[in-house]
Amino acid sequence: MRHRVQGHTIVYDAVDMPHRDTFGGTTEYIYTADDERIAVVTSTGQWEWSVRGPSGKVIREFGSTGSTNFQWRKDYIWRDQLLLATRQREPNGTVTTYHYHVDHLGTPRRAPCAGPSLSPPSSRRSCSVASRAEFFTARLTPMAFS
Image 1: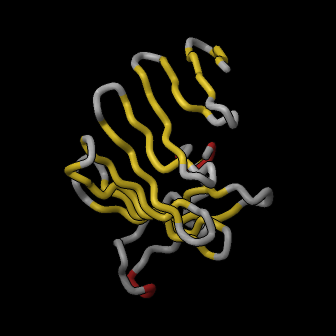
Image 2 (image 1 turned 180 degrees about the vertical axis):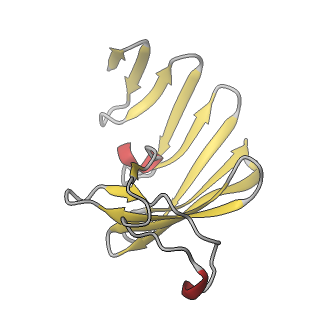
Image 3 (image 1 turned 135 degrees about the vertical axis):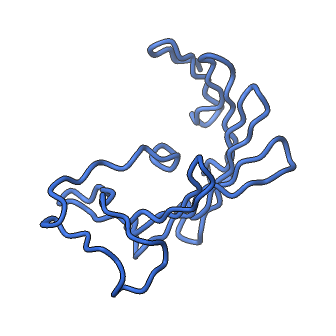
C-alpha cells in the first residue's frame, strides 16, 4: 500500500508498517518480529540504529556507515515508564545531559537549565520553574512513531 502526504510517498509492508519513504531520496525502515523499529537506512548508506530495553523503550541510539564504524549518539534514561534524562553527543563532540519533567498530560518536556554532566547534586544549578520561567518541548524522537 502507498500513501502520499506533503511530497512524501510512504510504502507500507504486509502488516501496515512504514517500509520506505521516498522524499528527497529513499529512506527504509527495518523492524524486529515484534514490529519495533531497530534501524533506518538512507539512500546515502547512513544507518541509524536503536536499542531497546526489556520494557520496549529505546535506551540507546547508534549511527553507522553500513555494518561498520558504529558511533554512539544518544542514551535515554527512564524512570518507570517516564523519560527522566538523555545523554547525547553534540555536533561539537561534547557529551551533554538533558533532564526532563512530565507535564500534566504526561508529555516529556526538557528542562532548560542543564548543569554540569554527572556532577554531585550540591554543585548543580537549580532547574526549578522559579529559576527559569520557560520550559520547551523536547525534540521529536525516533521512538515517537515506532
